[in-house]
Length: 158
Figure 1 (cartoon, one colour):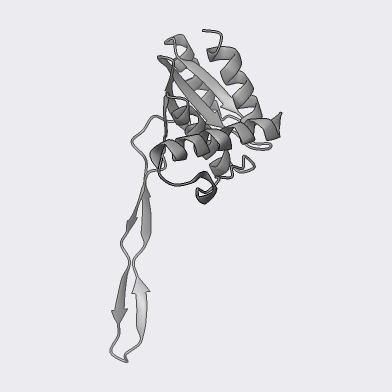
Figure 2 (cartoon, rainbow, N blue to C red):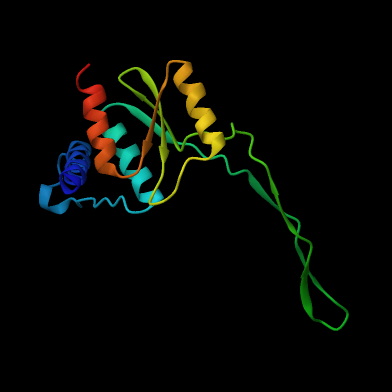
């Protein structure tokens, strides 16, 4: 099933590419290969799948930003050295926010990506409770196969 779900995603992407470039023969178009073994790979798989099925999805980042106060100076002997420091400023987003925010068949859906032994933090669990109590849907994706199955069970029956 895992190979089937990734093949389906690849086929959806190929069909969309053919629609976008109707004059290019099929053999000349690239076939996208998807991999869900890393957090970035799984995030790309899910976002592409949601967008290719006529829904909307986007990646959410709450890492903050870096301020670089370093300067390179040349001393009287002609040697250069770097002085100053790098500082991180806290992000302005909600703590515990999900990795993907989407709208599926008119429903607000938040998707958290967890690979391997990675677990939800207490802040993420609290965020999940808030989303679900507000009527939204929250899903923790560990691989594309489980997301794909969940999607069809949850949204194809509507």
